[in-house]
Length: 159
Image (cartoon, rainbow, N blue to C red; front, side, top):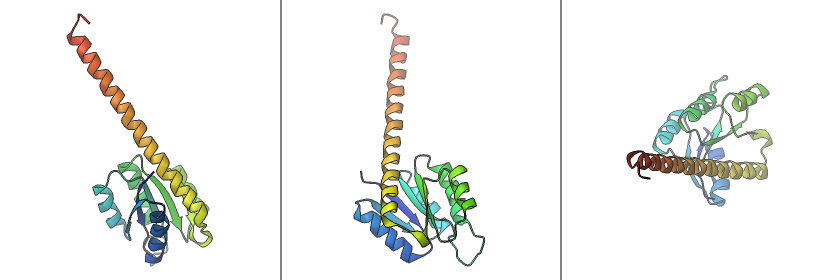
């Protein structure tokens, strides 16, 4: 399954490395470096399957968690989209918050990055998103069909 992926990281080396991994698997990839650019892209692309998101998007600020704020926005705007967090500075507390509060799909530490684990994770995330979106569309179609049948039955008592 071919997915649509957004990578948000302030380091171009990481954006390039991650996009190369994902593009080789046949997915469409866009990369941005800031929270503002990510929000603009998200507003234009409601059919995103996966966002790969760095927690700290501005390295000059010690306690910056723009990525966590962006994760919250993604959860509000794109209910089907999965998010994989990546960071060089993550703590267990941050990881728990990403999973518990914002339903992050997975979490990778840049210092211990394993490309095979990452590849499996992003493939699973894209497949789940595509499957969930299709299931939702199928349910909507069935509900619409039932409503139309009910409307016909209601207006035609002979049925």
